[in-house]
Image 1: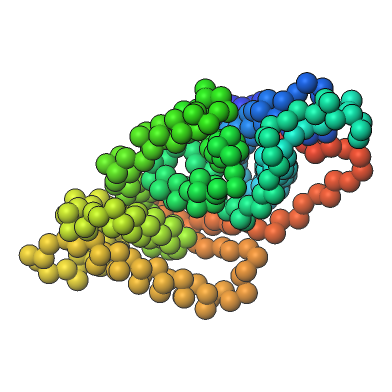
Image 2: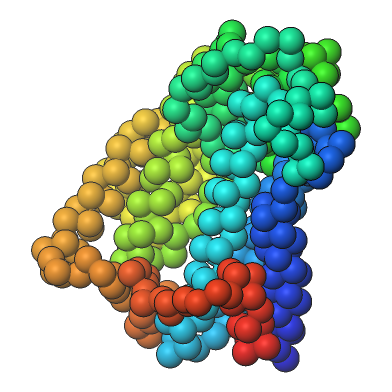
Length: 365
């Protein structure tokens, strides 16, 4: 019953996702209408991109929930189909991003009713045309996770905020381009003006950039880190180690010493480790020794690297399909987990749009 419910939910999300892809393709294929301002066009593209991001995230989550319930034999086909939707979404998102960046560099927009010698109908946006050469942008979209705000702001500040060749309106447009989720909602009500750009930056810093809330966000991630039940789940152990290391380094950069939270955090982390590793760590600790998160992280690192080396020696050619087995502590026996990569995808050709191709898949799933 639950499997059918998940399938129906995913089917509805795919229908909505496909309709949105069609809308985006139609918008990108249209010429700019007469009387359409640059700001209006940018707002339209930013709105489409934001909606696409939300719908894509919902669809990915639905795929993941469904994959937890289906049989192993169905996994390969399921992942291949899901990747078709994901790839089309990412492709159109990239096209939207390129269109937005190109539009930001244009000093004016010509409508489809304008001829080369009819310059009276050109919509000006600046008194002078500047040759803008932006640095290569590699800014991750900020969705409102406070622990990621400093990374986002440092990248945005260098590439956009301190770029003197850009006007504030152009900077504001880029800002909205690199925001998503609750972060975008926080500034979506501001129109594209110089004053609103400054107000938006101030709002984002006050809401997501306060030192106290960033520290709390990093600690929250450490306290709620996912458990790993088996020593043989090397992928899970590696992920756990990376998360712990990243959060601790972030806290150190904020001036939070490890000694201030080791006694609180170490017991929590130990409870998340497999029983065997928990036992091994406590066996090597001195009886009256205080917890030290640095020592615990180093212990986890060595365990992970030893297991990774062991797996590599046992399966040196397993680069395309990684497989590992583990004994479940509930005596359910050995289970196999597979990570599929380089899945063969169907080659869709012809004159069908990406949205039309995906539409044919909805009824099948």
